[in-house]
Image 1: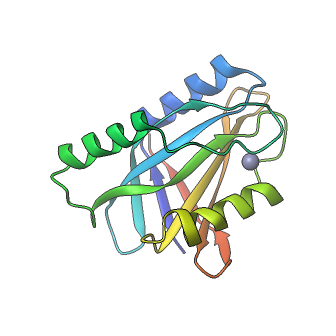
Image 2: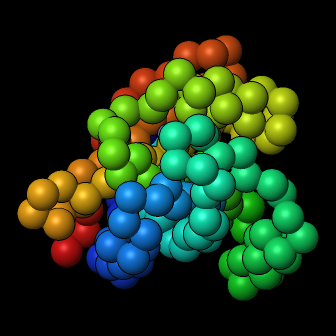
Length: 156
Ligand SMILES: [Zn+2]
């Protein structure tokens, strides 16, 4: 099973985004460092407001985002096998943190067609519970339409 580690600085960022966006969905991309065979630590995330609250937001591969990725790869010395884009995150402020049918088909589209070089991609879904704590799920999507839960570990 894939293991995803989220360090405290990234957790703080996610929480801030969830608090400031209330019932509006928010999301973006995740950039990670490979730290073991099946372990990845989230290093950075990008955030983009989502249009509409109920429909999965299909993120545009904007020039700004490409520039951000380029900059990330430069900062990490183009060690793509160690530092790379690992997938997407978004919030379900009003729903369970499970991937919706639309989320599943969007991720399948990404892994099979939009980013064919990737062996897998993850989808992190987050929300705030009634105690303002983060509730989350991570799903790992593979090429053939297969997907499974990944293990999520929050670092203190
Ligand atoms: Zn969703």
